[in-house]
Image (cartoon, rainbow, N blue to C red; front, side, top):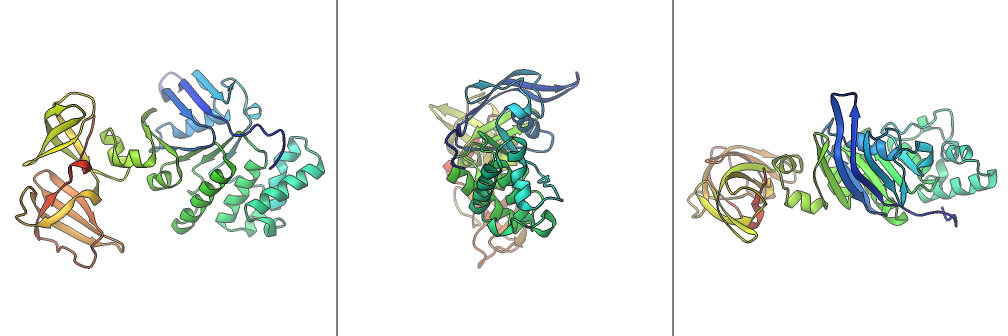
Amino acid sequence: MNSSNRKGPARVVFDKVTKRYGTNVTAVDQISLDFPAGTLVTLLGPSGCGKTTTLRMIAGLEMSTSGRILIGDDDVTKLPATSRDVSMVFQSYALFPHMTVLQNVSYGLQVSGFSKDVIASKAQDVLKQLGLGNLSARYPNELSGGQQQRVAVARAIVLEPRVLLFDEPLSNLDAKLRRYVRQEIRDLQQALGLTVVYVTHDQEEALAVSDTVVVMNNAVVAQKGSPRELHDRPRTRFVADFIGGANVLPCEVAGVQGERATVRLGGLSLQTNHCEGSAAQRHVAIRPNRVQIRPAGTPDALAATIQKATYVGEQMEYMVQSPLGDLFVTSPDTEHPVAAGSSVALSFLPEDVVLLSD
């Protein structure tokens, strides 16, 4: 891992890249992206949105129809996978069942023509780094799911790639192990300064591991930003709903002044952030944990009724009927739940109401 000729992590650039299958299917449509060197960028979106195709085009497993792909300063658009200095960890791990952990990790080095001494040194170093040194003689079927995941990562990083790719790496793990392994991946990426591009459909996973999240929908980029930016300041109805399941509510834009907008929300008038676009009937997003449940009759609040109250351990979840429609609301107060059928009032802080562009 300390090879003197290692090039180091590389920036990845997509310049108006399109991928079509035949004449009727566009998997990726004119996307331009910049993945900074040494960061973890997640491609997030529903099935069929284009995220896995984008990852495979970085790897060279799919060729773009048009546009350019750069890794570092090199235009790799037409290069085969073997010439891109990229490693990929597949969803299935793709470990060789007849090889030990050490043999699996050493395989890529052998194919690359390294000497036996170098192979032994590099493989043992990376196994130790990932806490697998005492498992080197085991076979994949003798490992837990989390251990198999680490072996797959070890096999990828032992080649010292300029870019490391993950395709739904946690989908085969149970919920508790997913949290543990995703943190392992993040810690490893930060410790080694790797450029990582990570694909998932799980928004919690994306928010937990990423420097930057790219939300994709219908073959295009819906929004790109930090996890907090995407969660707290979605720009569109799709992103607001996909990241965290916000309440998306109709509103009327009454006026715009500078970067602020006055919106009418039911019987309330609020100052909130302004997105570019027409000042006509629009929508706002409000996160479930940002809706405040008040006693009935509270001034400057919306009258509402609790339809359903559910205790889920760390919080209460409420379905609430209001003049704006049904809202999903969460509260950390599990000691004093509000009973179903109760009349309440709902209020919002202006900074928690996000005006959407569509």
